[in-house]
Length: 370
Image (cartoon, rainbow, N blue to C red; front, side, top):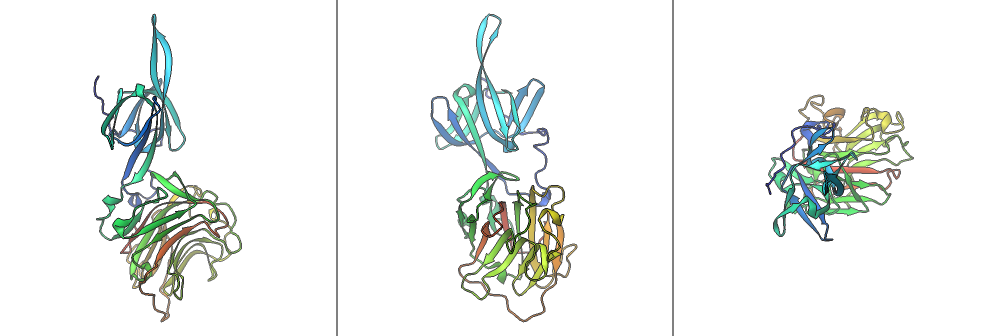
């Protein structure tokens, strides 16, 4: 039997393999594909594929499908005849993350996986189905200069010990994200809490970025409710919410639309309070208000040095575009120093019960736009 390794994808799959990020510089970390393999004898195992694509042969030609786009692989036993002989052919149905489905045969009769049992080599005739999941490789990000935290948010439990942080997820579920998986908060009591070993509020500059999808962008803002993308909290201090970033019709300070604030430093907003009634109406998400978008909260108390925000204390960016800026406040209220109990909270609670999907949150020690 010829040992066949599936090659790295070189072509797109009907647009599904195109660039995922709307801002290439804001791409997520390295995606690691894992596989749950179900065998015909009823057993199953988890492993890491030793192939990077599936070469599918169909009636109209061949597709080289990157494994990062594949959600499921199901083996179907097709019976037929070749001349006078009865044959059984293993055909496959390949389901993609975007719900596309392709049928055909695979080039190569053997698939290889790394597992706790070592190298596992399986013929297609032994396999019933494979479910693929995508996870970020946190270890590769630890040494990125200036990166204080990387939380992939691609599963409900995550070990962030490499960054000295801890994560808790409450009533969330895993869904396909912009690159790999993401977490969906869809009930009023859903919440993600990241316990931090540092205080962003005490930092003279920094950047917090994340990917967000808002499935109901045309839902009208409610009375006081808003989809906050995150809050930085320090319970028990004078100002519990030290930083906040999200959408609102009226933040109470005359701002609306996409709003960001740093207690005692700056408040920025894309619109006047009451000027818009929904997220889609802001126009910030262009023609895909219900799609995945990259958000950045960028600050430097002594003045930013980035295009479209030079000299400002705070800038808000969407898909790499600065959409709102703010000067530093003229007051003597000191920013609170670092203390124990600092946490970043992503919550659907109080957000007009609208769903919110998030992934790939990063905190940097410097003010950066990309």
